[in-house]
Structure formats: C-alpha cells, structure tokens
Length: 562
Image 1 (cartoon, rainbow, N blue to C red):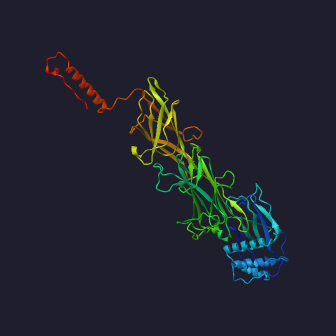
Image 2: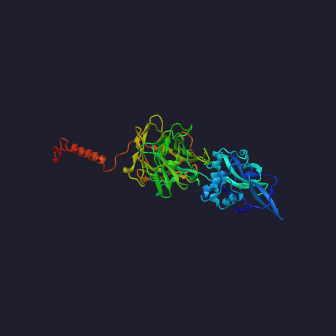
Image 3: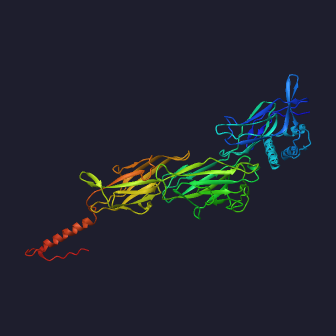
C-alpha cells in the first residue's frame, strides 16, 4: 500500500523551496493534463539568465474514493535510473535497504523519513549522479528574460527534481536544486531562495591626533597625506553549503584608482586570514595549498587579485591545517600608497572589490558578488601672500612658506615635523600645499620679501568628517579651527573651506597672509638696548674729553666695551 508523505519540503542547494505533500491510493488512474512548474515570482524572483531543468522521478496517478480524490505515484516505465535514486537515499541514510528494484512504496517510505536538511542532501546527491551519467532532463526552461521574474517547466504530472543548470550573474548567489511534488495540481510555483556569498571592503582611518579613536576605526572613508601608506581590509563570507563542495574557487578582485599604488613588500605585506569568531589564523601564500597575490594575467583595469585555486586545500602559514567552514570569514589585509596622482577634495580616490566564488557544486562554474567601494580623501591648502599698503593690500611675490604637521593634541614646537620642502614663488603670490589630511598644522614664512616683516608662525587644526557607514564613503564636513598666530589665538587670521570642491586644481582650504613693510625693532631688553646704552656711553666719553675744560671731567677716560 502506498504511504502518505506529509509536509515534504523542497530544497534548494543553498536553502529550502516550498512543496506540497502527497498521498497514495489503492486504485488509481492517470492524472489529467500536464503541470506547469513556475520558478520564481515577483516577491522571490529568479535571476535574469537563469535556466532550470526538470527530471521526473515518478509518474503521478489519481484515485477517487467516494468523494475524496487521492494522489499516488508509480515508477516510470523505461526510466532506468532508479539505482541512482536508491544510491542518493543511501547517501543520506546508510541503513536504507532500497534498491533499484524496490517498489515505489519503498522509495516513498525512505524519502518521507527525511527532514529538510536530509532532503536537500538527497536532491543534491541525486543530481550529481544523474549529471555524471549524462542523463537527459525531461524538461528544460527558457532563460529568465530581462524583464521577467520567473521561468517555467511543463510536463506530465509527477514527482520532479528541479535543478538550476545555468546561473546568471546573480550577485553572490549559488546555484540551486529542488524536489517538487506536483500533487495533481495544474500549476506549481517554487521560489528559489539561494544562499548568498558576500564581500565587504573597509579602509582604516589613520591615527593622526584628530581622528584618533580608541577602536581600529575601519569604515568606508578616510583621509591621508600624499605619500602615506593606507591600510585596507577585505572580508568574504562562505555559503551555508560550503561543506558540500569537493573544491572551492575563491578570488578577490581589487581595483584602485590612479591615486593609489598597491604595495606588497616586507614593510607592507599582504596578509590573508581565516577568521572564526575571535580566532584569527594566518593562511599560507602558496599556489596549491593557499593563495596567490596576482598583479599580472588578471582582468584589464584590475589592480591585483588574491586567488585561492581551491580554498578547501588552504593551510595555515605555519603549515598546520586550518578549520574553514560555512561560518568562516576570509579576511585580506593590505596597503596602498597615496601618490601624486591623487584626486584632491570631495571626489576622493575610490578603491573597489568584488568576490568570485564557486557557485555550482554539481560541476564547473563561478558567480560573483556586487562591487563594494571605499574612498580615500586628501586636500589642498592654498596660501595667498599680500603686502600691506596705505589703501589696503596688494599681491606680494617672492615669499616662501614651509608647512609642518603634528600628530599630538595641543602640540608644542618640538612636536611639529616638516611636511615636504619650502614652497617658494618668485613670480606669484599663491602657494599650494597638496595632499593634506586631518591634523595639526603650522605655516612658517621661511623666505620673506625684501623690505617686509616676517609673519609669526600660524598654527591651525584641520578636521574632516565623513559618512563612513554607507558606501562609497562621502565627505560631509571640512573645518579649520584653533587658529593661532605666534601661539596666540587670533580672529584676524581666517580660513575658508569648501566641502563640495573636488575639481582638479581647486583648493579646499584657503587663507591669506599679509606682511607689513619695514623692519621690526628688536625687542626691549635685547641687543637694541645694549647698543643704545653703548652709544650713550660713547657720547658721554666724547663730551668728557673736550679740550679746554679745566674740570676733572676733562681728564682722558678710556671705556672698554666687552
């Protein structure tokens, strides 16, 4: 007697698909009409370009007992692959005694005992076997059209294995297989719920004394000086059915803008880790038992790849085995140097990644994730030099300025380090300092035009604020604060900022410097006092030595000035 299967769950290669139960009957007749199996819907769409195939394992029959109609299944006449069905059952349940010659009731009994995960395993094992034996599918769908959310298979009523044979570029999703019981229905809809592989990219803000958090501060935006080495981090996940793959290709594809130069040297090496919770194990750089860092032979426009030919073979850097499972994250840490081609201002310097991975456990094939992007910012300071006049000010050429930076809050003079060489301009009054980030700065006039006083050093703080939670990371505020002249707070020295400026050659931070004509007198108590005092003595001596004066003061007096 046929048995009842209730609550049979159809299973995707990476997640479940819904399916009806079915019942057997003692008397039966052929079900009327074909069934249409629709894969995908508006709420759970199939990916554009996906193709599905259907293998009918059992034929459906219907029986009427009184007013009730029951559904039963029969072995297909002439279908010679029940040995593979039996083997797939034994993969799940090694104690099963089902053989290719068993009755349909025996198959139904065995499958009916499986839970969701076991049915998934059964479906996947069966498809692998059928594929290896080059068994033709009974129905093949059209590819999901550009403007569609589904595709269909049509065939006789039955008990079907539905598999995805072509995977479109569906952004991190893996291919799927499913068991579908049509149960005498004219139409059945299954919704592919595919497991997802993801990748993320982060850039670390530098510890420069302004944006200097306690945490590591990984986000989607950061600022750096030109010449700095910028740390990046890539994190990839694995599918829930990772264990079901016999091998697993896994490649990070990274692309940097012209302003970022990828480096991989002793001081700034590429490191790759397998991370399970708080456990972080460095992986071996090896073509067979680890990963390769590739800069040649990769796709046009890409900067470098981190490629695992087979992640299943990955070993720890110390040659120990490493535990990599569905919950493991693969983390890549590397550096790029911000170079002279860096874009200044709000447009920033983007860097993006996508992950390519095995998505078909039944054969060859890879999928890829969406691209994820971060942005590195740097800025330009423009100093304009003027000379003070009776009517106001005029452009003053021939000056030179040197920029210094400190990394500690409330810096003293000894905390500042020179940023590049003096910027001198004999033919203009505009001085550009390119490639600045957030920090504590000092401008020193190191060459003063003849006839003018040298300005006291100007100190100030640059602070950039970002939306670093969303991609690709945007500049939301740029401010200059704590302006001092000669160590004294001054409202006379003003800076302007433009957060929206990202055009080539345009400064984001500007200030004017005004020199006064003449020479500064030495400070009271300095050499000026000594020289005036000496001059006074000299006059006294000269007066006291005037001939013809009979007084004692007319005597010769010699004064030595040390």
